[in-house]
Length: 269
Image (cartoon, rainbow, N blue to C red; front, side, top):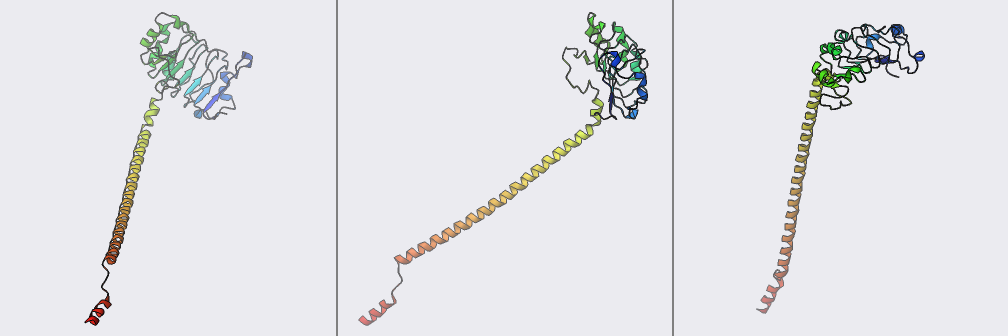
């Protein structure tokens, strides 16, 4: 189960008789945790009897993702102030206008999905110009997409936009995850210091490794010198042994005088 302090949602596909609780009952639902802790709220297929948003309040002050797919919405005029909202899913409803409320209530919105709604004209989308952080807009299966030069007109109207219906102005498909389109630039900036610290730590580790290598080389150098000294000692010993051998051979070639030889000579005299 998802952490209730981070995400809340109902998923009830099927006929309306089996749909989830009405939006109007949301604040009184006993399973709702502290509203200020909720970051993701999914209300897909929860019916709206009057076609309006009911039950949501500014208490969802940390809400970043809100999904109300197929809830029979005609208007979003009752949307509460949600300053931290980044992603808003409103596909498969009957919304035909009134988008000016988004600039007032969700000023930091980066992704907006209006696919499968009743958007027919380009000028209906003009209020979205006041959403400076909007990067991703989906109007798939809306009547407006059938207009001539639809894509060029939208990108001209909304210069801050990067992706329209999943593709950029050059018809390059949006990646599964795009930090800029996801509105994560600020988070990356906040983590910039941490990244720099990590890089510094890596540099320090590299320097330590180099010092260790230098120490090992010095130790190996000392060992080599000891080996050389030992080799020199061995050579000296070999030379001494050779000298002794040579002296022995000389003794054999030049034996010492016989002391009895002088006595023999005296006797002869």
